[in-house]
Length: 537
Image (cartoon, rainbow, N blue to C red; front, side, top):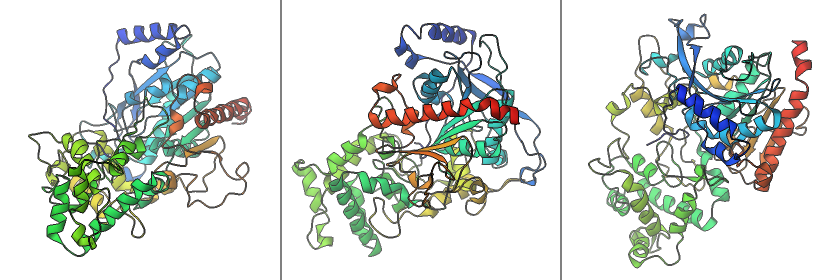
């Protein structure tokens, strides 16, 4: 299973052989551009400070040690005087971000500017853990301010063995330009705001610069841009189910669950989130959703549309069609259009994710109510992500209180909040708040965010759009080239779609191609002013 926004962590090991392989592959790049997609990178390890704020009582008892923070770099395009592009790893392993050096946005910018690209793994992800476990006390240093301080400290002290001449590429003597998508996009923006005297610039893609306790707006782009017949059918099914819950029709609720093969789930909220796997839900899902759509088929999936195709199939098998009438007696004889196709898809696509001997209602599958499961303190990306959600970021996906919904209204913010209570009991010196203290995050952000040499780029079909610079809730900005930030909204795009590439910008779909060209122009304009900025420091 995975928490929304996270992926499985992978392990990378440095070796002399890996370095030789990298040199060989880089040497053949110009003759065989397609080989870039197969590049591998040896892991490097940086001595990162555990606590950048020794005088802040928030971090008592002030750990003074360091930990090994993993980073990867690509110097195939580098020429003396070129910039360094730092890709912020975000809530996953650094190795899972390699594509951004191989064929993605960092490759594009390196090629255009003779730059060097580096991926820095975030603390508490991948192989970059300060401690051997993730108890509540040991997680005390997993905060936004510590993470962005890592970026500045790394830029000031990083070394890049094997680069020709082994030049000093540290900041601010070399222009460092950050890029991050999603949470890493926000960290990019916050890093430039806090450490703009060290870090020269940044591109924040799909960056949630605003957070909230509840985020039902996650479903708004799906409501707006999804196939209208599919969306209407799911809305109606959710309404009908919620009416059964409201009227306490327990036998009908059990019957409804059985249509999906999920009658053994004891918590209605677990059931509601499980049948939302194909759409996207508040916690764990192992299928591709709207968020996993992508213009680049190498990294995306059209499973969402396959799901909708099942829900709207005009000629389903009779055994599927008849399920539309299974609960019609509760709606005055009106069938629940699409229910059979919906249930059929879940049974064939979701239930197999829980093979024997696992039980459907266990935390190994679709249940979430085993407190012991949450108390496991082993290091892992999911645990790290949940911790930051519980302490600073919140933004729990939940059903809207009014209007149409793709998620049953039995799911509210308390559903995710209970995991916090079970997972992070108070330690000797660290405890989590009763609800996320979003002020620790919000002090950096806000819809009026503006900083020199910081650009925001978003997609208008992104489920996280309303937390970004281009949110529908953001105030009107009459002058986006003056008081506002440098920004670009990609029509028809989803979650940080600009981070992906195919090694030939001119051959990309028009809406992505022009976004990449804008990013190239923006970065080049910054670099023209670098020497003046450096001299004025």
